[in-house]
Amino acid sequence: MPIEGNLKSINFASILQLIAQERLTGVLKIKRKTELVDIGFIEGQITGAFFEKGEKVERLENYLVRSGFIKKNLYDMIKEIHEETKRPIMNIIIDDKYLTMEEVERIIKFKIQEVIDEVFTWQDGEFKFEEGAIIYPKSLIKIRLNTENIVLESARRFDEWPRIVSQIPSPDLVFKKVERPELKLKLPEDELRVLSLVDGHRSVNDLVDISGLGKFHTYSCLYHLLTTGQIELAYAKPTPKVTKPKKEISLKFLTTPATILLFFLIIFLEILIGNVFVKKINLDIDFLNIDYMEEDLYDYKKVFFYKNNRLPSDSEVKNIFKK
Image (cartoon, rainbow, N blue to C red; front, side):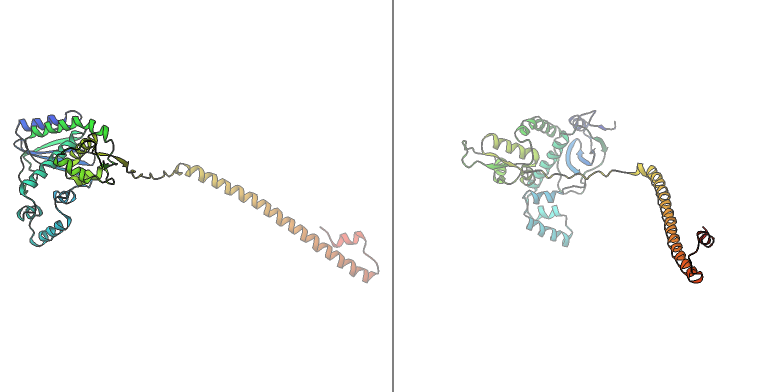
């Protein structure tokens, strides 16, 4: 029977329990928008998990550096050895005893639980089980996790989550240590680690990134530290505002009417300017003619007087200057 569909119609826990009961081997692929999760199984047991968010994929060795299990300068040296010898980075880390096999296995199991926890919060997503496929076939570390135990742990965490986020509602909150807490408690190792990282400047998101405990367990430790009075709220880091690009108003719909209107406007202006120009020319010509006519009449009268010792009559002038 093919195992595929959408998480809207069947919950994630039921899919995992079915794979466990049938003792199936393969890879369960789940996709939601740009997020992709692969979970590997051998005979119904979980062997690995892979979470890709958009183009963001974190390799295990990068996680070891970010969470402080391996120092950055040591990791740079391991990379140099890898480039020279072509040995896999995880082989170098384990063979050269930078971390023990047990430590690496514990970290991988924790990362698998973290991926399962994430999918438990999804309300939708396309899934398909590829029977016979193997996740990380060349991996040196062989993990086998009881699927039903993982499901029970994730379900427990899912139930606790609303209570935790009621006290820590934002990943941008910043906590600080209480210098003299009313209760001086002997804290578990994980809570001591988180407490040591609380400095009044790191946000909850920052603590999740560097604690090495994952999102749920870091939040859980912060919740216990907060409710027992070991830490208190300092402030909330401002979330960077994303400036939305201004919408450009398209004038394409005005192209045809505007062109027609402009065409008629140009014609109207040409006619108007043309008439004025023509009238002006005619007017200028009339003025010029009048000027010229007055000058000629004066000269004519002058010449006529010298010849005839008198001014010309009106009829004589009209004969000479006919319009």
